Each structure stands twice: as C-alpha cells, then as structure tokens.
Length: 285
Image (tube, rainbow, N blue to C red; front, side, top):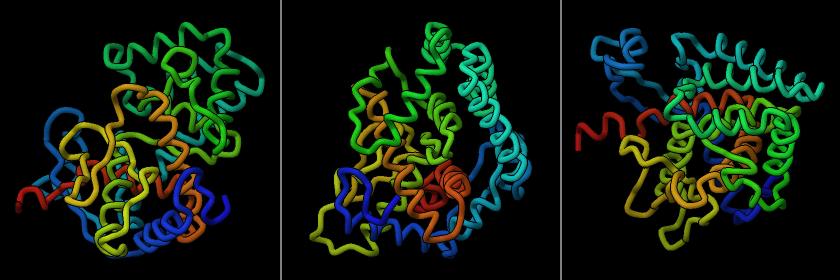
C-alpha cells in the first residue's frame, strides 16, 4: 500500500496517524489492566503478578507479552501459519469440505466456537458448504479492493463477524488482511484518541473513516470528550465489520513499513492492548 492511499480517509490525517502508531511500536507508553482470576481468563491471570495485572510499555512490549490459549506469540503464530496454509491450499484445490473443516479449527483456536453464540456462523458455513471456497475468495477480494462496494456482506450472501474475520484473514493468499476483533478495534480507537489529543490541533476534525467501530463492552470503549466511535454491532453489522477490516488492514500495512514489524505482530500487540483500554486508569478515576 502506498502512503496515504487508505480509501475514503483524509490522506494527510491517515499518514499522520500511521506515523503516530509506528512511533508507538518502540515507544514507552505504559498500559496495564487487571485480568480476572475466573472463567476463560483464569489461567492467563495466574501467569501474571499476584494481582493478576498485565502491563506493557509500548506496542512492541505488548507483542512480546502476548498470551492466548496459554501460549506466547511465537507458538500461536506457528498455529496460525499452519491453519492459513491448510485453508489456502484447500481453497486453491476447490475442496469445500476441507475448507469447512479448517474453518472450524480456526474458530476453535480463536475461542469463537461456542455453538450458541456463533450459531449464525456455523449455519452460514453449513449452508454454503458446497460453495465456501468461492465465497471466501470473494470476501478476500472485496475487502482488499478499496474501491469495491461491500453490499454483499449482508449476513446472508457473505457474513463478517469476530469468527469470520479470522477465517477470511487466513484465507488471503497475500496475507495482507488482519484480524479485526473487538480487542484490535478497541486498541486502534485508543491510539486514535491519543493521536487526536497529543498530535492534532483542537479545531481539526477527526475523519469519520478513522473512527473505528468498537464493541459495546465498557472496557473496550476508548471514548474521550473529543472522539466517539460508532458501534461494531447493529444495523448493517456485517458490512460495517468488513469495512473496518479493510481500513485496519490498509493502515496496519502502512504502519508495518514504518516500524519494521509484520502486520501480524502489530495486530497481536493491538490485541493485547485492547483487552481493556481503560485499564488501571479506571480504578484511579
């Protein structure tokens, strides 16, 4: 991606935000939060300090402190690489049955395989089991083409949600699409808010296209007096999610050149940062 080529976004503002985010990679901005010692987070919490507190200074440090499924970044990267190679190979061979199987493995890895919460995703995979190779290829092509309309993401023809963003990301043969989930969304919003506060003139308006859609959980709402973000879920949620995946992928590709880190590493750092963007500041307020 060439500098300033994010579709629909003010070029100067886009470039400036990418430069800001690149500087945060090796920066020392502190961030910390408590991880509950219960539920799915219990095992992770027990690996932290006695209070279950995760902390990092800068995005690179956040990536180095990555944890998912009880494993570090390198271990998860290996598993994602394996799933991605299997998925892309199956698509290339037009093996719909293999694609369905690997897609479910990806959902299991991502912790989005709850049959009740992800009923719509499982149903979509089943209903498109004879054409899923083409459907995923179409989804990848549409998101990567910054000028392509996204109306096909209507929840029936094509879907996009926390599970599908992982599957579509790994389906991309060029590996240019990042996973856009609620944690990555929250972190991007957090840094946009900091960018507006620290690097922009108060009279200048934040581009609507940079107002990343975020989930409804309080800990993942990076709101400030100046910046409010649209909801990730609601009317047109599939199309909204696809649009956010497109913009995030374009921005992170540009940022990766500025900080000499891979898009997947930046995505992982944002994922860790975005678990709770209010963090310890909430307990002090």
